[in-house]
Length: 258
Length: 258
Image 1 (cartoon, chains in turn red, blue):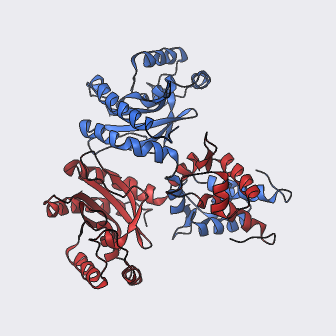
Image 2: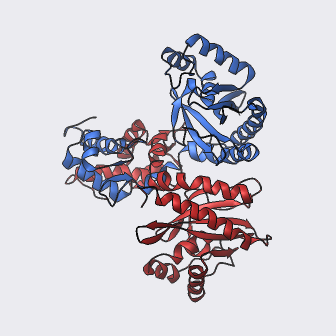
Image 3: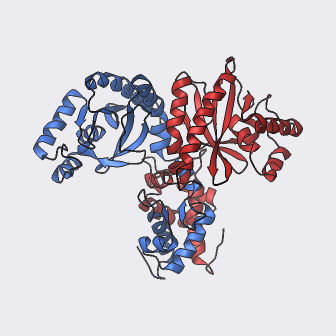
């Protein structure tokens, strides 16, 4: 963070943003002193910036005195393309898959070295999953992640395979085996995992391909999670493929989608 | 907006926030000059602040040079209580209602003089609706809105009834008739509308009540929308009531919900 009076603008804006940065999924509600500490901001500065951010609606002060993300940021976040251009287009197709299968269905995009979960539909009869909308999970250990990794640039694959983390005792962390899996995903057009992210569940996933002029890009991955006693996983692949093609066509006609 | 060098901190933060304020649902993608104009910021200042906001991830620059809301704000927005404490708790119940009825189901909270739509599940066979997640619609013209208005403070009711807007030729705008409707909503515990927000659809809605110690508050409204040829609207009320009670119980055990 830039500081000092030589660049007051830079400093003030970046300090305000650092205050927002103090909040994350593991710490969605923070006290003044926690915010000051997490953002590296002096207490008096934090207090003044919090007043401005709260006045605008970026943050809200709770009855217990702690701060939380305000409705204004929720509003603005809904305008992000991941929501406006992908989630809204894909949601009805995910609901179709859920209606047909009653299983947990989710949609993810690659965000650096992670699979970012953009939408999820999960019913009462569905297998419990760790991912929520907004979750980031490792690319190599999830069905949607393997699909996204199979179409990622070489340097991303190299970086993931350099240090694949272990989530369960079934997580595949051997780089050679992961490489062979990715080749297989590219060849057959879908990925599967067996208790690699969480014990007790299996998953399959397919790419959502979007035609862009003469080329085709993998814009997202569509996956389904079932309890590990289920034996009908291969039957789910064509269900996902039909939905993924529908999403791909809908995205291709969304002029703003990149 | 404060300006001048006497309060550089106030000025700079509020200018950065004014730039974010330039974006809304009707203008989710803006050029530099549009942002400068909409936020009342000089071009050079806007350019510098955009660089900072883009660097942090609040905004992203598109291939066509325009700016859009970035993934970072989407991430932070997901931490707002309307998402974290209400939407995530209620979603499975909305899916239950949709699975049972195949109709459009939505959940709204009161935001000032509007019904703010927090969650929506709508399938291919469901009636098309104008509301999306994040939409704000008039309290007096929607089913969920009438439910929320029926439990709103007197001054909110007075303000809405002072100038009720007309959305269709069926919108009830007579203050006396609206008052009688609200009394009826309180008495029987549900609201209905007939083509008052959009032609061709009917809606019913019920309150989501949450017990807070010895008092009960209406935390949200749960509604369903059907095509206007349907004659089974009263049958849907108990379906909604069961789901609303489930949501209310789940919210009561969510310690953080206010």
